[in-house]
Amino acid sequence: MTGSMSDLTVDDYAYFDYAATAPLCDEAACAMAAYQVPGRANLIVGANANSLHSPGRAAFEAMERARKSVAADIGARRPDEVVFTSGATEADVAALVGIAHGAAHARHIDLARGETPHIVTTAIEHDAVLQPAKRLEAQGFRVTYVRPDRQGFVSAQAVRDAVGPQTVLVSVQAANSELGSVQPLCDIARAAHDGGALFHTDAVQAAGKLPLSMQDIGADAASFSAHKVGGPKGVGALYLRARTPFEAQLLGGGQESARRSGTQNVAGIVGFAAALRASVNMQVSESARLCALRDRLYAELAAMDGVMPTVEVPSQSERFLPNIVHVLVRGMESETLILRLDALGFGVSGGSACSSHSLAPSHVLTSCGVSADAAQGALRISLGRYTTERDVETLIAALPRVIR
Image (cartoon, rainbow, N blue to C red):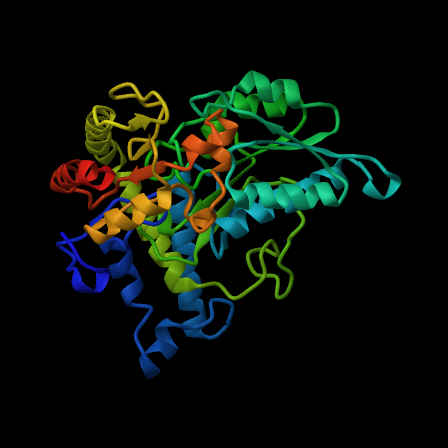
């Protein structure tokens, strides 16, 4: 496998960046096809779901069927707890800012009087959580960033210790996008609620990889992304438990029960629901298959000179996502590894796609105690539905050549 991407065929290229985005799955493409016909035919199937005429009502009904499907697949109590968004970033920002202000007002904590509402999150969250947390700090909130252990796990006790009388919101991701560490959400949600705070989780990486039920977890809010489960880009959802204090961040026509204004992307929403349903239906079998590939990769890579697994992932471990492998390559930089592997027909990453163009070491790795120098050689290999054993074998064979 050599050459640029324009010279490669689909069969030549082995894609290992599912944590950044998953290819559009067959189920989503089929579901969306009916809503993407061009010309006059689209007047019937592509109407605005908020219009009163029959095409509008048909679009609304399709969107509501999708809402019921998503609600069932994430374990919501009722469909109207699902708010469709433009993606997980919007859902995260809406949850952090909207719930923080809504909960502070509900508890009569007044920023104008100099009172300081408090938020607890972690040092290894996605930037879609960390950046709105910084914005809230600028607005007068106090934010505590709980640090993980060396393996990327956040302790429920650490969260419990951080929660105080003025804490209005705790936000902890379900699973880390770089290391794959799965957080003890039920215990963390309980720690938040025992302290009188609401609980939000960024569930983007966990959806379709782990069994998830918002009711079982006790989440008040959660964020989801379509393209991480094989759906289209530009669509996501915010789970918002009924009666959770919330101040809408996108104002306008009052769509999504006035929690997120803007004309809904019906085709994308239908595709999201189809992809999520497919990933949930395949979750048990796919997790077992991917876990075996993950364990083989860790064993083979650990035996290579200059390669060290970033975290200790025991065989068959369910404490880490089944599809993420993360290693540190001594004496090399992520960018060099990524480009050399890409030239050979392998798509990998150095960490979160949202910060892949940054030369700074990953905040996730440094927060876990990895030195800045070692973090420069980070390599993330993430697997998914279309990853084959042959893909894994060819990557294992190619990596020593790249390192040499």
